[in-house]
Length: 252
Picture 1 (cartoon, rainbow, N blue to C red):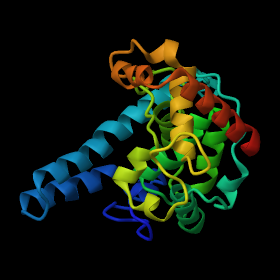
Picture 2 (spheres, rainbow, N blue to C red):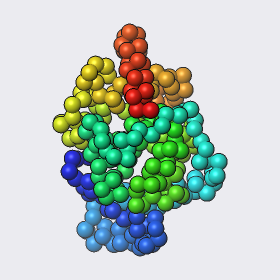
Picture 3 (spheres, one colour):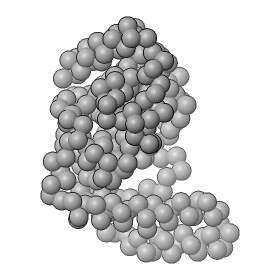
């Protein structure tokens, strides 16, 4: 993720594939040919094929196997409204401002921005999953429901309780700092969970761990992440909870 670089190295084929303007088999064939002719290394070609032939078809199967009940899933009991700034990008959180600005400008954001910026914020804040789904469906040019809905409700929001992905993808502002340059110009400190310059992602991350501790602290893929709560003083955890609740009231 890099400020001012909305596309980076992504193929930009999703809209053509999902709107049936491009046959997935044609994309796979061209990818194989590029590898065989030495124009693409095997790790790149293999990863691209896995996304189209593997993950995309898996998501299709989930949609047709689980609908229409899948649309109503809300395993984490999330009911916060979607923040208004998702429609304007009017926020002083630099990562969200960048991802939302390009989304509203191009109808596009790459998958890490969707999963680990916009989606992550909604998950940590506790936004009602169907509201997140409806926003994604409205703003992205490649958002056809069969592919968008399972990725949003299952992968991004863990609303299906682990049916599509076995664990919630949660992280603090430190992750965004490591994976982008967004934090360089942001007024928030990704390493702080409380205080005037605390990063909302970090505040909400530690609050999320507290709120869902019973569910995930013994999960084989999340136990280590939840174990980190033991290192935080109880008074600090209480301050984090209070700061998170203030954020939710302000954004409701």
